[in-house]
Amino acid sequence: MLGLGLAADAFAVSLTSGLYIRHLKLQKALKVAIAFGIFQAIMPLMGWGMGVGFRDYIIRYDHWVGFILLGILGARMIHEAISQDEETEPFNPMKWETLVFMAVATSIDALAAGLGLAVLQTPILFTVAVIGVITFWLCLGGVYIGHHFGDRFQDKVEILGGLILIAIAIRILWEGLA
Image 1 (tube, rainbow, N blue to C red):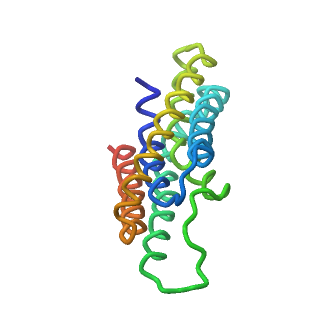
Image 2 (image 1 turned 90 degrees about the vertical axis):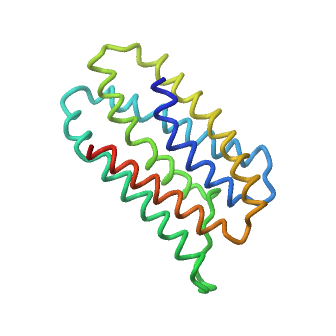
């Protein structure tokens, strides 16, 4: 259940990535799924390694970091869709920098979860493996689903993708403040 909960944001962002990927091949979908799966597995491991000392600090700010990162990315996507600026590089979820940015933004809550796992003395290697595998499979499917809708709604994709990322950012902030 923890794996599904942590993977939800990554799944939504992989849907958005799929909207943008033209000529989808398995290699591209695997690249997205592997990136999200690895970060969703590494972050709780890092949190677990930090131990209880930083838990309150990370929990206090994780929602703000996710909100800012995804909000900026979503706003940039909408700006690019509306702007007629030819010099602006279009959003490309296949660029490593963009992919890592999205994977980090969606896995910050997993860092805090890892701190909680340390307190519970959970067998961490098995837990992070399950989290990573669940995230991988959900994101792999998410890319294909997003791609399917991207083909149908090509002209509105950038605005829709930006709005989805901003909605996820707001949800992360809302849940963190609640």
